Structures are given as structure tokens and as C-alpha cells.
Length: 225
Image (cartoon, rainbow, N blue to C red; front, side, top):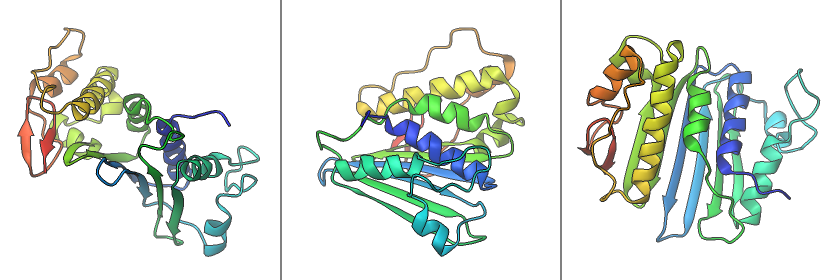
């Protein structure tokens, strides 16, 4: 089976949530070296599924979509989790949204790489009418991003300004890099002068995208919890 970055699985789960009418999608990546565990959670407030739909959701020939015949996403993510010593769980009920959790042995040789979360989240942020909350925890450090808080800060939606979307991509990429080396990666973020006025406002400010903890560095929001 072709190794697919986990970020692409997350994007597929996000698309499922949008198809289900979600207004808010929460995405979390949790990594812990001590327990050799990695967990991905995507939770939405969409229509949810009946018990029978939830049971058959990982069937590669099951889909609630009418725009294509089969839905391989959950089946592929389940396979990716199981080949890395983990599992896939689905919790859902009609009218109460859906929560999908995939677990992996973090150091398993067959665990797929996380991949480009900045690109995945840029696509998610551009989705009209959907707020995105993202949290990535690694060994006690956490990076958070919220379109709702970004919108409160800017007064406009990120999707309305390509410059803000570009900034979101860079901001998330910097946060992801900082998680890899949190104590060494917290230098101020240089700006390249290509931002639109709205994006520049976001980048220049100490944008508070996370609550609590020790905020370190200008627009970066990596902090110790």
C-alpha cells in the first residue's frame, strides 16, 4: 500500500466533516515519546451518523456522499493505524457530530509521516462557513491555532484575504518546526514585505491563538503547558 502522509488523511476527515454540514472542526495531533504513542483526533459538529452508518464507515464501499461512488478515506486511515500498531475509533450520533480518533505506535517503522500540516490547514481555513481549531502537542509542548480567534483579531475572515491565508500557512509551518526544537526555534519571525495590510497586522501583532501557558515569541504560539 502506498504510504500516505497523515496530513492527507486529516484533510480527508476534514472534507468528511464539511460534507456532514459541520460548522466547527477540531483537529488535534498528540505525540508522546515516553509512551511511544501518537494520536490524531478530528471532531466535528455536523449531522453525525446512525449506529449502522458508524459501524460501516470503514467499509471502502460505504459513503454518504452522492458526488462519488465510494469512500476510501476512513478505510485507508484505519489500515495506516493498524499497520503501525494502532487502531481507529469512531464515535458519532445523529445530530451530535462525529469524533474520529486514530492511534499509532509513534516509533513504529511503518508509521506514516505526519506530512505538511500547514498546507492541510491552509485548505481547511479557506473553507467557507467552517471554523477550524487546531492543536498539536508533542512531549509537553503545544502549538494551537484557531480561525475564530484569528477572525476576532483581524475583524475579517482569513479566507477573505489571500495574504492572510499565506500568513496562516507560514505561521503554522513555523509552529510545527518549533515543536521539533521548541527551545531553539523561537526567534522573532521576519516578514518579507509581501503581506497584504490585513495579513501584516496579524503578523506584526502578538496574535493570541492559544490560551494559558507560557507564550513565547511574537506571533509564534508555542508554549509549555
